[in-house]
Image (cartoon, rainbow, N blue to C red; front, top):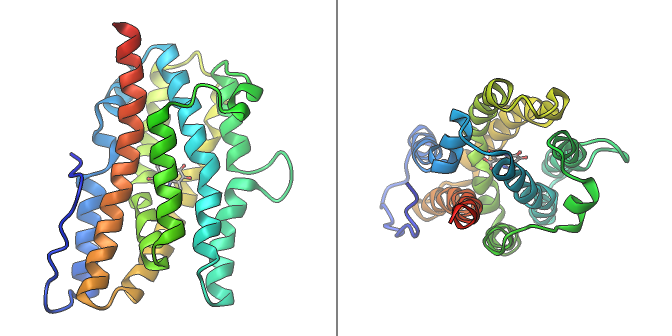
Length: 243
Ligand SMILES: O=C(O)c1cc(C(=O)O)c2c(n1)C(=O)C(=O)c1cc(C(=O)O)[nH]c1-2
């Protein structure tokens, strides 16, 4: 599903905001990691406990870097309302104090699946391909324009649906995971909807020229590739183990 590179074939007249939105939504549908074979196996209940634990461990590496990439985007935003909007994302993940926030909820998901919090925090078991994918995303937000960083976050247009599918799958097929552990996914349904609608508004406002519009679409394809590469690494490790 992933295309690797997207040639920038600049169109000459700018797309209307509705056209641009349609293109972004097409990318978020057609390239999203809900179509990755690993996620399909997860949703069908086909993952063994060790595979699910490996996914939780490696996705934790992604989760803990989300506020880092958001801080890099924040540093490039030039007005108080924009910075306030983006700061809330960091707070969603880090919480306002110890024991709160998305990272803490992900640690509790790990514990509900039998993983040790200290091991997750140490980064043991994070695969090389996952490190590279996450570093790629962080550096993208460090080096590219705010438009591209914000557009890359638009995978979240598709995230609320995958969260609901995942909650159903966990409740049905993976009952050995304590139900309280699913709090992270539940909180992301609402947060993902709000984040993606705010980010979409910014991208439609900022991407006015054909070059900007194509860069926004390419940023979203890149981000889909990040999520895809992460799952490639996790599923290859499982295949190696099966022999
Ligand atoms: O579990 C998922 O499938 C999934 C996907 C995505 C995404 O689409 O980027 C995010 C999340 N989860 C997530 O939990 C999250 O906090 C998040 C932040 C972002 C982002 O790029 O700003 N994506 C995602």
